Length: 415
Image (cartoon, rainbow, N blue to C red; front, side, top):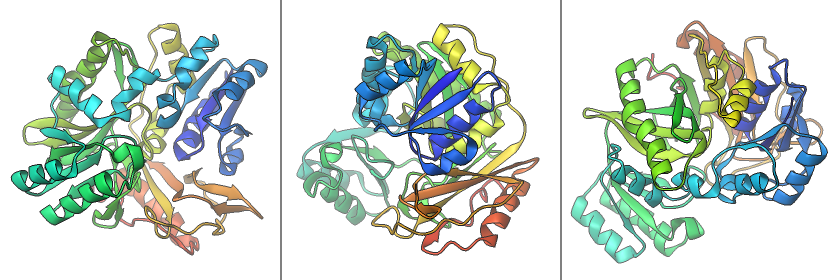
């Protein structure tokens, strides 16, 4: 089997590596990928993810069996629709279904219409009206850019001043361009967050093991929101009952609701959830694998990922088995991330039998150098979370990482 993966980050590195671990898979290509991936035998394709025509041509010329889409932007640009029109097999939601991530308002309306538990909310595109609503509601309160903002368009405002500043940035200063032309203002929910992903084929839902992501930039959950600074799985403080409740009250009604409204979803559905005193509630939906959750969830998959996707594309029942190992991953980011950050820092060679490195924002220049905000993730698996955490930090403590930083407390909540 030959597989094409669309995307360039740590998530795509983990997905492609998992595909390659299957003896039935002879080659995995990644467009554009990153040079760190080649260390795991992944072949890079120098075609941009928005160049659908050239990607389709490549898939046909190389006799690719099917294509897997990693990031959200190609999905929202209709890459699945285009590949299918060209008669090619591709796994991911169509453009209309990817709106579950592309618009917070779309997702909220789906939840309201299908009685899916979530925070109370209002949408606004006018600064003064939004400001009046915040003054009426008080703080803490959550301000979200309606469209895509690479995980950075969410502000958990502890004070009214902070909320108004966020509204001004989005609605008046155009910090996120068209993505922030409309905002969704939500009630603040207290509780423990967790990520629940599932393989979905229209109304059929196959949940994965859960993970917990760390969104804030610095130790102790301080600093700005990022795309994710590390994750771990399992999440012992979230009970099996809560997870099962989330499957029944969130994932299944979401999949059924998408079919009912004429935008059936096939692909990876990600629910960002919070376990409140009234049960699990949805913070957000994504239309693809999460990053960094993918890098800790896929090592726990004992079954073949390629065989699962093949079965779903054929409309067959996939065989899905998970192991009981604990996995933990820590992101190494560029100084200044998620704001303006430095690039061009030399990445040291990580030599370890216990850890795996998934590369993201890197380029090849006399070895690997940093070329993005989140540079790489170091992941380890062990019998316990404590052992996995020790392995990762032991390796990170051994290497020099000038102009780079990472959190030192990933997994502490579970321990």
